[in-house]
Length: 616
Image (tube, rainbow, N blue to C red; front, side, top):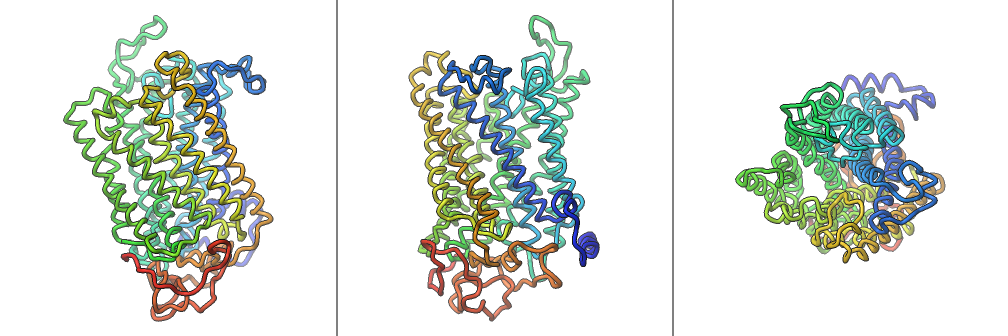
């Protein structure tokens, strides 16, 4: 608390310089926006790499002269080389998982929302918060520099399995590019750890008066538990990355076994075990799935309640399910390793924990559906993307139950069935939650409204595009198409599914193009969008009681005081259908207060209705 008080006293009463206010800022809101803009830039790069992948799989062997002139090393004569294809696959996965979704959800939304939703002036450690962001751009520079070094970028997949990633001479993508990949990831992990320490301390110590843990919005619960998850899991991957660097540069043998021969030359290593890397990677790798899902689960809960005009159903069960998912996520990493020679009894144990983790996930899903039951739903852009999140989460979750069973997973291992699964449950779900959060909190971030019409066009093109792109991948996976494959035309059993690969590639190109609707809407609204009111969605949580956008230190002279939980919607005795957390018990928001742009069909809804309350 002292750090924030000193921070407030240092900056109260005078205007900060441009560099201190917008570049090297210690304001959590600016840092969150910096994370968001940087993640958006990396999303464009990750999306372009995905288009390279789909061009090759849809039309293998075809020449693309324009791309050949832009990438003469990777596409000489316009035809993609195997090394460039594998680098594109590796870097696409790395960028989207670590440099887009993790940074946007925890760094972007986490930084912006945590102090506002708990009634604090800033993070507990503002300077450390600034450092956490400024480790992110150097990590990006190191990662992207790997495209321009001898041998090209890393090509061993985003999982970087040893010994391919441990021996610089193993393949073209195993050279300096792989080393830079490890250094970049280590920098980013340190940034995540700085952020996690800050989030945990802030939530524990800087909550406003009256803000008990069970009055926290579910967005904060998702971000808080994710920070604990990150603090426990990311150091394991950091240690593994350092060990792998020692194997590559120092001659150690943590992951390199004896007896390897590369290019007819025996490898001078002995005593290592490649499976050790898999255990260390997936000990972080599966919690990382929930690092990308727990914050969206909280955000979606807030957006659903605000647009359904109902309290979230079963609040305490929702909190318990977030905590349960986080705990169980440390007990399921072995289901990624069923084909590694694992003992069947151990495989059965991991199968059991994998199926158990579906229970708290199902609780959240049914509670969302109960919240929507007989609700007066406002189909805003944010609400549509929230509903899309639920659709993708359920679709991907069902195939997760299939893949959690060793007899089935052994057949589907490393096929496009797995690619389809995680692109639904992790990538598309997290991406839609990010869009939902952007449309919902954009007015608070920038003081302007995004276009609802463009937002809805963006939703429908993206929703249809995702199902058209990823759902057919289940079928090509069942037919035996391997992931990271360079050319399906090389295998006789895959030639019959090539028309479907063409369809998937066309759908993926359309999906990528649809995102430019969002980019146009975002930047146009940033400068030309209608001015936002303080509480345009008539929501109850604390951030909507601050100005739009909030001033430096958020709250002016006095911090808010909390009197009720975060989901006081449609209370029978209230003059309006929402009561903010700052309204004392026995009082209600004055009629007409907080009316804004959100309404059914573009109109502003009003009045009280008698929908049944959810559990609280």
